[in-house]
Length: 100
Image (cartoon, rainbow, N blue to C red; front, side):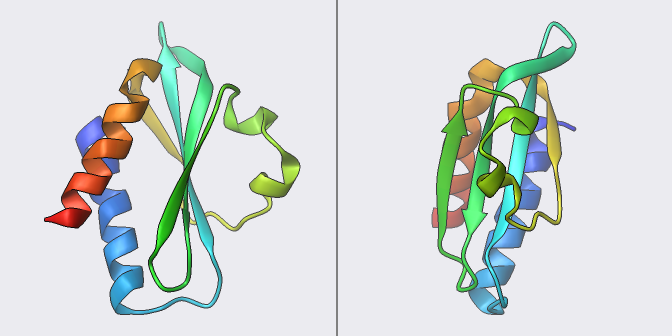
């Protein structure tokens, strides 16, 4: 999935939560590629029922992170077409879109 599409989807999900509170927190994990394979790193947006969110970054792929983190319900799993060096720009792009 493209960088821009992921940013748009995550931003819409968080914005929707801010307007219509959910019942439980959700996770929006994003993996990246490296030379057309899954990279050793990921980012997870943890969205609270009220739409507030926090960002967790990991040096492992999503399948290798703490199982407790994996147990948070996720309604989407994003695989970004870009390399792992786009992790921080993706986090910033989401924050910038939510601020505007």
